[in-house]
Amino acid sequence: MDMQKKIVMSGIRPTGFLHLGNYFGAVKNYVRMQEEFECYFMVADLHSLTTHPDTKELKTNVHRVLSENIACGLDPDKASLYCQSHVYETSELYLYLNMLAYIGELEKTVTFKDKVRQHPENINAGLLTYPVLQTADIILHRASYVPVGKDQEQHLEMARNFVNRFNHRYGDVFPEPHAFNYGDELVKVPGLDGTGKMSKSENQLATLYLSDDDELIRKKVMKAKTDNGPTEPNSPKPDYIDNIFGLMKLVSSAEVVNKFERDYSNCTIRYGNMKKQLAEDMVTFISPIREKAEAIRNDEQYLKEVMEMGAEKARKSAKATMELVRQAMGLNYFAPNP
Ligand code: TYM
Picture 1: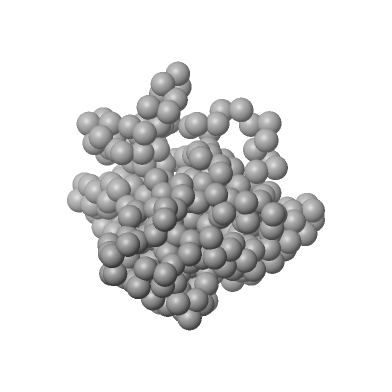
Picture 2: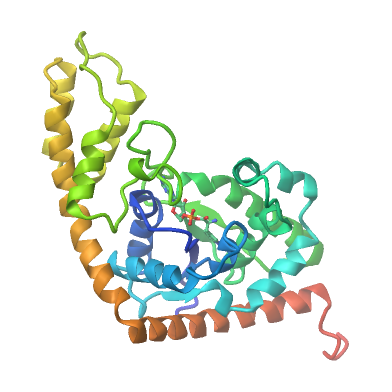
């Protein structure tokens, strides 16, 4: 591989179906980045154990996430597409990094506090150190760019802190990792109910999944909250209307978006028509991905080959990094004295 290329790493938890937020926040960037950079993309099955300790569905879910990534355009020959648990070096680096992470900062993490609220019966140490494991994933390949959605910004900031602490204590091994998006800003795809974001496991009716069939897509879009429309020209948009425009910008043509913007400004907008148009554009966008993903998911042999090939590339990079880490940390007792 070309040593000049910057290294890219990202991951997705196999805790549910991929949705538009995952696509526009992350996967769309992966597909473009694989052409330019040395890329490592993985299914974060170890992370999913922090909230989903029951592993009965895990294999199916890992297959599903892999299939959906490939259906979106990820090419296992260009990027390394692997499963987190196949690269044991992750766990070793996670252990070392845990000694550099402070309880106070981990307890303050927004995602940790959310999870504590959602699962008060299972506040485990893995949940607390989730950002440490995520840092291990990233820096195991000495990655600089991490394509993620806006919700991961704080985890990346923590990753930079851990990296700087490591480098300061043991010597410069890791570049600082930064959240990446081709646009100016990290993306947050809102839910159809006008509150919060699209998410794998919460508010299912407000989330458009890449596996939704055409009728379900139409049904969800038509249910999106609207009102009677503006009464004053050029009124500001309420959040739930702004979100519908936001979703339209993702999948509809500029002409279509401009038409509804004009209708909004001069108070002639009909939200029923707007949602019908959005629903059809969503169907056009999602249905080919859904169909491709289904076909790939049925080919278990192919998925096995993809995972093996991805794991091999990822392990090679991980092994090289861990040599440097052990050496920097003074854990190489058999090396000759310097
Ligand atoms: P996860 O599985 O929750 O989400 C996968 C990716 O999708 C993005 N995303 C969104 N982007 C925009 N709008 C939304 N509504 C939306 N919902 C999700 C997320 O930002 C993410 O990029 N902790 C990570 C998984 C992970 C990881 C890593 C990521 C594990 N190790 C190393 C990067 C690097 C997570 O739970 O993502």
